[in-house]
Image (cartoon, rainbow, N blue to C red; front, side):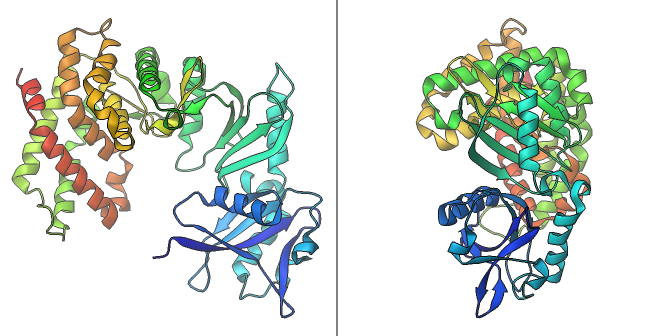
Length: 450
C-alpha cells in the first residue's frame, strides 16, 4: 500500500458559485494533489495548496471517492484577489466537469453546498470561517481581536471542526466543534470550564447551534517542551485537577463523562471476558500463544478482586482523562492546562497516572529510570486525602486497571459491530496478554492478598 494518496480538488468560488477547473485537451477537469496517507488531510491539503498556488482555502468536506478515483476535497477559496487564470484555472459550473473527474453524486453534493445555505451542516457552509471569526471577536470583551491570515485547519467537514486562528497581536484562538458520536465533548468541556477553569484554556465563547466552543491559546504541548521539570509540573497539575474534580462528579456525569467507577466496571466483567474468549478463538497467528479459558477465568477473578479492593479502600472517585497523552497537556510560564475531553471518565484517579506514564516513556525512554521519582511525586499529591497504605495499595493495582480501562474505553463497542472487527480483536488480544502479565506481577498479587 502506497504512503501517498491522490485527492481531487473542488475549489469553490463563493462570489460566482462556481468551481475552478483546468482545461485538458479542451475538457474541464479537477486539479489534484498528493498528500501523505497517515496525516490529517485537512491540514495537509490547505498547506500544500497554499504552497503551490499561494491561496488560502478551508476544507468544507471530503468525499470518499470510488474504485475509479480517490477522494475529493471540497474547499472554499478564501483569498479574494487570487488571479487563478495565471495558474491555468477557469471558473466553471460543476455540471460542466466531466464525470471522469467528478461523479454525478459529487456534483449534486457540490450544488447542495452552493444552494442549501443554512440547512447544510455548519462547517460545510460557504462563509462559515468569517462567521466564526466575527463570533469570536464579539465574545472577547476585554480587548479587540484582529485576526491575521494565518488559519490552520486540523479537522473538517459537516459537524466537526478544529481550527486555529492566528491574530496580529495577542493570543491565537482555537475553534472546536464535535458531532455524533462525540457530541458530549462540548458539554464536558463547558462543565469543566465552569467548575475547574484554571485547568483548561480560557473559554471565550460557546455556540449550542454548532456544538462548538472557542478557547484562547495557552502555551505549548508537553511533547514540544518536554523536560524533567515540565513533566513534574504536569503531574502536579494533573493530581490537583483530579483532587478538585471530586466535588463535581455528579455534574461531570450529567455532562456525558462515562461511569468507569469500580462497581460499574465489575458489572461488565462477564461480558468483557466473554468477548476476549471470542477474540482469542479468532487468533490465527502462532507467534504468540493465545490465552486459554483457564487463564481468562483467572484474569477475571483477579480483576474482580481488584475492583472490590478499590471499593474497600474508599478512594474518592475523580475525573479521568481518557486520552492523557503529552499533546493534550499545555504549559505556559504560569499555567498547565488540559484539552481534548471527549473520552472523559469518572473512576479511580491512579489509573490516569499510569496512562500518562506509558505515553511518556514510549517517546522519552531516557526518563524511564526516573519512574520512582515521578510515581512518588504523584502519590505525594494525595497524602492529605488518603493514608499512605491506601495510596500504596491503589498504586500497586493501578497498572492492571489502567490496561483494563484502555480496553473498556467508552464501553459502547461491547454492543456494536466493532467487537467483530479483525483489527480491534487483535488489539484486544494484545491488551489481554498485557493484563495477564500485570495480574501475575508480585505487586498486584501482594496488594490483593492484604
